[in-house]
Image (tube, rainbow, N blue to C red; front, side):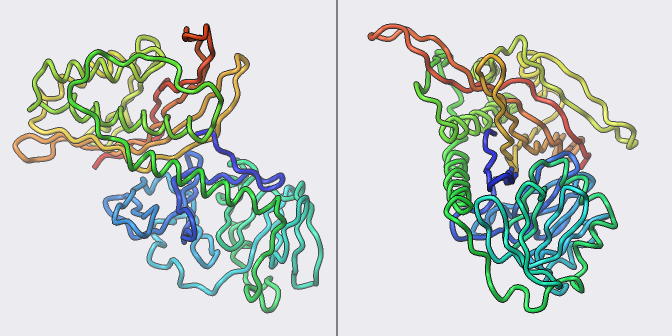
Length: 398
């Protein structure tokens, strides 16, 4: 949410909670539904791509293979078509050189020697030259996989001829990879800021989720920050998504008293801008493999219906994974809107046997807006973060 890291005219769309600091991502996953994740692919299981966002952690995230458009490995080789089937081949091919993806649809194979404020110095088979940033819509170079817009990522990665050109090492200059890329202070600054912001998001994720079963009265206080701070407000948005997950775990737990679970519904209601207006979409996959069925209800009704899960299943598991932060967009009324993408795993058991389970990718809308609040010094404006509509992107039965 809210973070488009600019490298000159190129917006670095690192939407996942990727590696920070000195740890570099090994693989980049381009998704058909939009967005990309940086991590280390560790395998596939039950139609899901398994990968680690942080190689220093044992936590493994998953993503439906049918939503994976391409995987770019540590040797800068693009695996497309059926990328999950190529997991065993990641990192085995000859190391590739950099690829500049141009506005006219062409691919320039090169070594990027310098990134200056408005252009790049590159070395190709035919010699040295410069490429203005305005002509470049994507770059694959070292630890960078950047696009000015995800529409270009989807366009290039879905075209077999383009992928072939990217992977054609015969067009690389001699001796590529022996010298790294130098960057101007302006070009390097977003890399530093990106690491700092992703670290803040990761801290919010690590520190969230410890929600008490009963908390009264419902916290509907407004006014968290006087000054707009995208980094802090983003972290608050991530925390609220994690709180929603924690509430849902309790609401669906039939072993918890009904009154306590109902109280959690109220707490979850308070996370939304308006639980009686915001819509939540849910989905199911028929046992016969028919089309995915979706339904949309107001957030309050969705949460209330979760209370009945204990009657249908003896055990319910709800888990959010792979939180991904999209771009903040300013709205005409001065508020900001963003999307947090999550992978929700649902499993319902009866007497220890899985009766129904699915993995659903969902978009959770986040709204950041100002409220007037009375303080001892008079009325002041404060920023706060609210959950909005929740929609289904893809669903796969497990």
